[in-house]
Image (cartoon, rainbow, N blue to C red; front, side):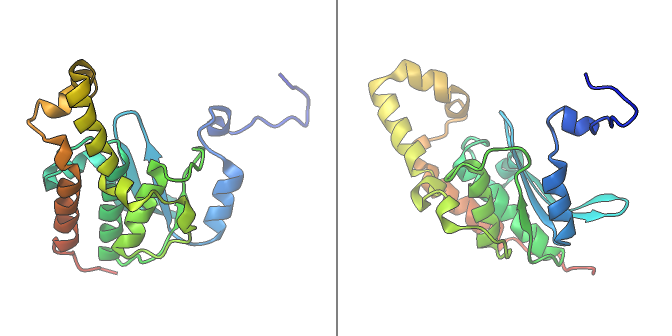
Amino acid sequence: MATGPRYKVVFRRRRQGKTDYHARRRMIRSNRPRLVVRCTGKRILVQVMKALPQGDHTIAAVDSKQLTKLGWRGGVKNVPAAYLAGYLAGHLSLSNGVSSAIVDIGLSKPIPGGRIFAAVKGAIDAGLDIPCEAKMFPSEKRIRGDHIAAYAKDLSKNAPQDFKRQFGKISKGRVDLTQIPAMFEKTKSKIGGSPRRRSTK
């Protein structure tokens, strides 16, 4: 480890590999709210945040598990769930008077067509103005979950044991995974049709 009178200890979160302070500084200096997307092994978190001198202020926050309250019965960590979480976060932001943001993916790798950009696409479709190239978004079929429905149908027919292992927790709730696209559209309609709170700003 480096030592000496001019050695400066690196910030803790940088040492832990949690924060890129150079990228964060650029985003803060833009003076725009950030659409923060984080994907874990169990859920997808989407937040719209504004940097203030006293710390980050959360304008809207959505955990993909909240989608179950809106009728979503598919997985909560896949592409359709990411889109719906972003879509809901976008509507909540507009309700709070925020209409634009920039994307904050943290230290995640920007993978075209991945869950992060599915969430970004959802927020944009909800009405948020977010600069992002269209080539980064998943296809409409992947967003609707057509690939999940097709895979589940094939697996249940040709490899029942593999289907049970991979989709057992979801199918226990008597969810017909082949109907994921229809379920997606229904949940999206509920989000878009829910009454918005008036801004207090």
